[in-house]
View 1: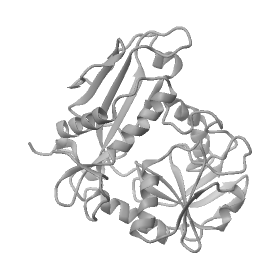
View 2: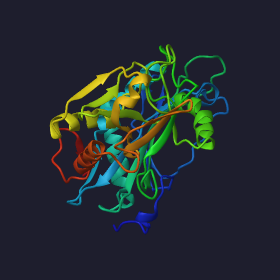
View 3: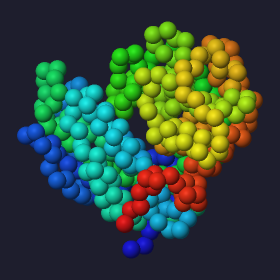
View 4: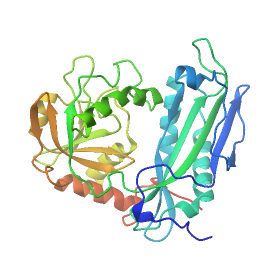
Length: 341
């Protein structure tokens, strides 16, 4: 079959209906086999656990067309493992890691005509998610769940090219010290919606959250981990038990060390030392790395000299190397690339 008649270069980062999605149901203590379906709509009880108590988690990953024409996914096993951790924390049944990866393969293969061609700047975004589906009126976990994956072709996260972002130090908290910041729960993102809208209204691109216990250390933004580069080119990422373990960030640290020969360090990073860094970036599935030009701390501007007008040199090398691995231009570490047959 031929590719769908889509203007790939004009795609934004939004939802486009594709032909198939995967659905599996958990009932009576076990998962069914699951299947590909064509209906994109979901019908659930008005008292479903997800609607009453936000019992839901999700993942995000992409499928690409490589330079040699193969369709691949990037480290889907890590998405499966992270979702398992989210489920355990939310008292939801774990969808088996191998079944998760199989479901990803099925959805990509069934929608292969929606995978954008190499060089188009677009990719196929995959959204695995799970939610409590049966009626729950008392505050307790659901007993029935649905696991689903849909796919949608997307363009670059930042339309018109990557421009350095301006962040603000947030007065609101993203996560509590013993809360759910380390998992990909829907409730974490609901908490950030007021703050991101307010940031945009105030002229900022994103919020930089600090630890809620001492308000001393930086953590992450509403939707991305943070990577910093020192003046002597050491790559540093904040360490905290309330930060979501980004697959992109973990991969970039391997790239920095093993491909670029840079020193890497994961450690607590104080707000007061931000001005000592030469570069700063936000990393995640959607944009890989987005450069940060400036952080505003209650009126005080902290500028990163290597990223005020464009992506800094080390950040650019990290971006080019990781996207080169994803697109098949560079050899990947073992297990990073899943070829879809």
